[in-house]
Amino acid sequence: MSPALALSLGILQGLTEFWPISSSAHLALILTATGWSGPKTSFIVALHLGTLLAVVMYYRERLLSLAVAWWRCLLSRERPQEEARLAWMVILATLPALVIGALFSHISEELQGMPFAIAVFMGAFGIMLWAADAYGPRSLTLEDVGWRRALAMGLAQSLALAPGVSRSGAIICTARAAGLRREDAADFAFLMSVPVMAAAGVFEARTLLSEGFAASDLQAMGIGALASAVSGFFAIRYLLRRLKRGGLLPFVLYRLVFSAVMLVVLFWR
Image 1 (spheres, rainbow, N blue to C red):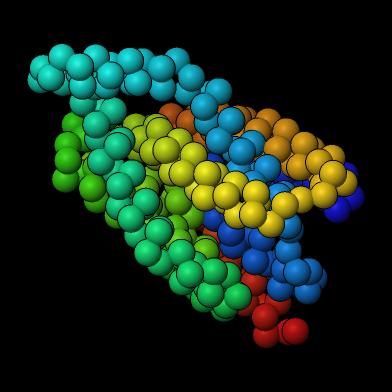
Image 2 (tube, rainbow, N blue to C red; image 1 turned 120 degrees about the vertical axis):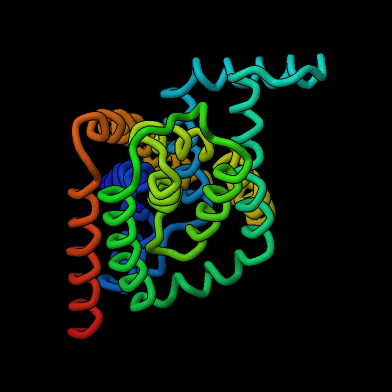
């Protein structure tokens, strides 16, 4: 893989992982349009490591605060205070994705080879995202996330096994439908991403260790990881600032245009 390609894919991964536009759909479009067999496992691991680093760096103070509060609550066995309670909700919301991902990861791999389904998912979930954002109530904050809302968002995150759905998009859509403010919906989506990305990284790393990788892959891995980390960091910052000023309509329109373009590519092949 050339440095230019590694840089481009890293930037693409960082942006599409955190914006509600589906990173897997973009990769599928590239594979469909070019006939490329796709990146190596080693490069995929590097990209995911980069995006994990991005969200950890952006939320480093909040994540540390949640971890400390959760640990103190665990040791004291007292009724959890706000930070500890939120940490428990993040953990609870993570469980469905881990379980469903472990059981049905093969379905996700099969759908990767079905670009028509991906195009449909991009368009359909774009409309759902618009409806939830436009008509959902806007008064609840992270303090109002109880176990029911946490589980609902966890189940929504599991839908991202289908390429074209978008993990962050599914969570934000569900959170908005459940009444959370836009910025709080995004905050919870990004906090939920940390344990899921870490678990996915461990799984992929095990595969990588069993397959091995060449020393020549290290340059592409380094460039891809750095590019996805930097672009992911700024993608998070941009989205949160955007949600304080306005809605998700630009991302909805992008999804619809992307879906239409992908369908055109498929029918003109």
